[in-house]
Image (cartoon, rainbow, N blue to C red; front, side, top):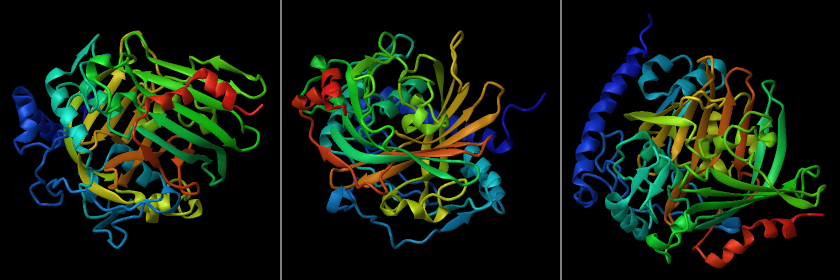
Length: 453
């Protein structure tokens, strides 16, 4: 019988268990621990690591003045890599790489991981921190981890005790209140062909982060999304809208689509779970957005522990480059991607009895400072490592916020891949304070009136 984990994997699992025990002690203390200095107001470890390669969190926002078309500069553009990892030296760094990253290094000769100095730049508004402190004492999960109760205005579980609590942190992490941007989706073949499959105006509203609202009046809708496709011409005029809820037990997700040829809006139950995203050519499904989104009822989620790994981070420089300088053969151009060493929470999701999903197992890596998934690996029903995903963090110190935006999914079996939510050619992200009146744009009737006929 084979050992269930390799030696490096067993090692970080032990470290994760130790970290988990520390977090369990913190959980017993509750909200006061967030103000004691041990943890940040967002639940991350405030201290750096032993050798100083991960610095302490200082809570200072990095300056990123908003320029033309909502572009934000790269505040670390002058820095140079401290180490470069290729297939030739991957063994020396294996303990700080995920299975998916190692698979990409092995598959594509041009793949390289350039590691830069670590900056713990994730800072959020004080109102978010205040809400997180309240959530630490009032939030809870019911319905076998599928429903969040008592949370509002911030991540619900700054000191998670289960995988579902940590995954809800990812889902409900702060990405702004009202955000909008135009983004492209590119599909690449193993042979290097690149296709722009759609350009869409994206509008996102987060009622969960209505700072004028109150927890006891929260409707249960945590996010509304509206996507209006403008290119290519064959798809122009199509639109879709979704609503996500904090109750996955009774309401996984709602979705509507407008198709110009039919000239009407249809309720669409297919914009969820593992339904293939046609614009991604089957390389990503609807639950692969942001590396994972949507209902959790298909999976049991285990909180494995913490690990120090190399992740894409502080990627403003990636977003500023033209797409021709970003997309390479097999992967993104290594010159365009900034990697840093950070602590992450490791989650492992396996199918519940009687449930199905083409992703039989998922491993998600959540950055401790944002609670957002930055890397993900997926296994198929035969137990083969099938896909690996990367998400790239936009630093907006002016808000302040730090959140993943563009993401990639690589099919390790076919060599095809997708680069989604790419803003390289379209501009930056606009942030606004939440305004309930804006929700009128996120309705099925508004979808119909806004469609091209």
